[in-house]
Amino acid sequence: MRCPPLIPATLVKRYKRFLADVILDSGDAITVHCPNTGAMTGCAEPGAKVWLSSSNNPKRKYPNTWELVQTSAGDRVCIHSAKANALVKEAIENKVVAELLGYEKIRSEVKYGAENSRIDLLLENSIEQCFIEVKSVTLLMDAGLGVFPDAVSARGTKHLRELIAMKQQGHRAVLFFCVQHTGIEKVAPADVIDQLYADTFREAVAAGVEVIAYAASVTPEAISLERALPVISRQV
Image (cartoon, rainbow, N blue to C red; front, side, top):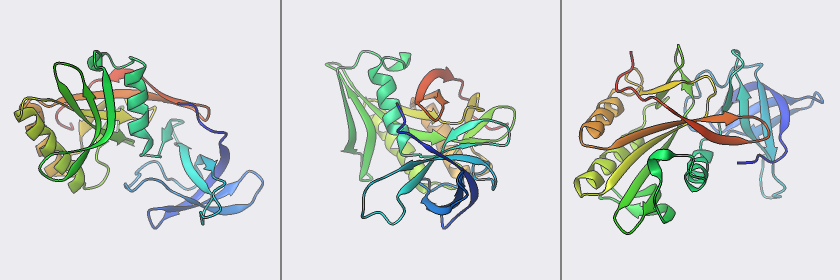
């Protein structure tokens, strides 16, 4: 996924979940939109180098959007969580994801399930349907371990229940961790943050839900999924 020309800046602070103050290289201070509802632990340190996109939409109060950050360890992170679905879709279409080859059709945001959900991606061929929930992973704990979620996520737990139900109905069900932090080398559920999610994750695996994780390369020029990462069932 090619990035539009991004504007470098320095983070002052993130606040009210959807806002951040930054200083441009010119010295100008501006407020930008923060497209991430999570805790962003380790990804919002004052003084960090960040990159912004810009919109020409006159209706926007804040024309700039925070896209990337470089951590104190030098890792790059895409904090725009909504981009995860597009990254995974692009990787599947480009046959990067070996586990998801052989499907003829791919659809996004399809209504499904008993809890009024929308599946992120639905793959179909003449034999089966494959329901894929995509989650963006940006929380690095230590020793290369990334965890999800970074804050309590009732919505994430609901999605796991929906995947379990799809598997029980005879469909293929996949939880896809889109790892947008270059320092993460393996992924686990975040027991210390959301115990219910972690327990439901393990129930889903036991029920036959597949879990796939892929790491993204992240630069100001482009972001793309490149390689599979191991997934462990419990944070240790």
